[in-house]
Structures are given as C-alpha cells and as structure tokens.
Amino acid sequence: MKVTNIIIICSAVLTYSLIAFSCSKKTGKDIAIEDTNFGNNTLVQVFNATVNSTGTTHVFIDGSQVTGAALTYGTVFPSSAYAFKVDAGLRSFSIRSTSAGTTQTPIIFSENMLVGKNYTIFMYDTITAAKQVTVLNDIVIPSDTTARVKFINLTYLKAGVAPNVDIFSKRRN
Image 1 (tube, one colour):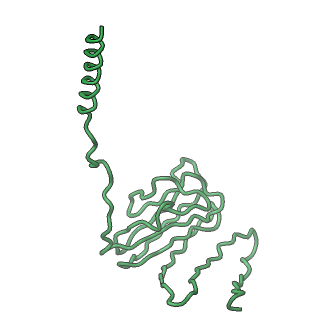
Image 2 (cartoon, rainbow, N blue to C red; image 1 turned 45 degrees about the horizontal axis):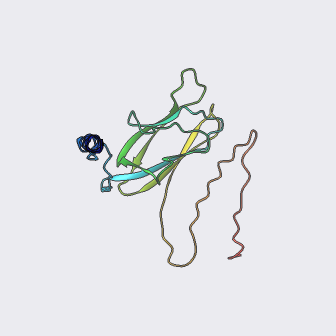
Image 3 (cartoon, rainbow, N blue to C red; image 1 turned 90 degrees about the vertical axis):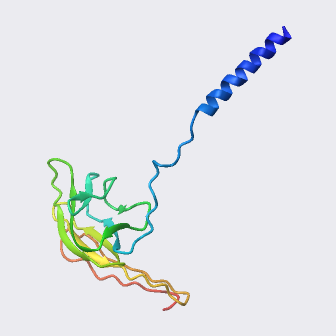
C-alpha cells in the first residue's frame, strides 16, 4: 500500500510540474513602450469647464480622436498625467460631442503649437455656446520659497459679465 501511495504522489507531482513548466511567461511585448522623446513636440492638456457638457465629449486633432474616455464637466484630459504629446506646428482641433442629436456646439479651431512648449486648452460657457481659450504655460521654478499660481476666471453668469476677482496673499500682504 505504501509503494502505491508513493507512486500516486510522484505521478501527481510530475503532472503538476509539467503543467507549470509548459506555461510560458509573457514577454511584455503587449505593453506600451514609454515615450520620452519630446524633441519635436509640444505638451497639451484640456480642461472642460463647459456647463452641462455630456459624457460624450471628445478631443480630435487633425481629424484623429486623442481622448479615450469622454470629457465631462470639470474634468481634465489626460486625467492620469500632466499632458499629452502633440506634433509641433499648425494643428486643427475639434472638441465635440460624439452623441447623435446633441445640442452641444462643437469647438473647432487651429493652433500653432511651438516646439517644446506646454499649453492648456480651457473649454468654457454653456453647451449651446461653447468656447475655448488656449493658454501657454510658462513653467518657471522659483529660486525662493514662493509658488507660481495661474488663475483663470471661467465663471458662467446667466446675465452680464463675471465680476473681477482679486487674489490676496496674507503672507505677502
């Protein structure tokens, strides 16, 4: 009986070993390669402040969709990184809803993207009067203990113009 049990155990160990060794490890060829060459490119991010914009809003550059997930009100693209890479030069942008029968006004514009620069495209107003403004981000690292803050007032008011906003530093008076 003991010899039979040993043979069964050895057979089971051999079978499991063959199964384990027959499986192959993935080589990583399916993983995207990190692109660190930004030599002839510019970096862009898009902020959606268009009131009531739907979950079907996408960004297109030169006719090609660059957003995976749709932009909704208050979201930034890309959401998991600072910006996305765009070829430098004159680019045609279209930010629009891909939903059939939408009332959202498409935002169509061209921008001359300079090599090595960083831009933020702000979408604002309402879905029936959507607009954009493109801002060059001059990234400066201060040599003292201060910070650089960019503020853009995209307040939507049903009537009139947004009031002026003052920013005050208590520490610096």
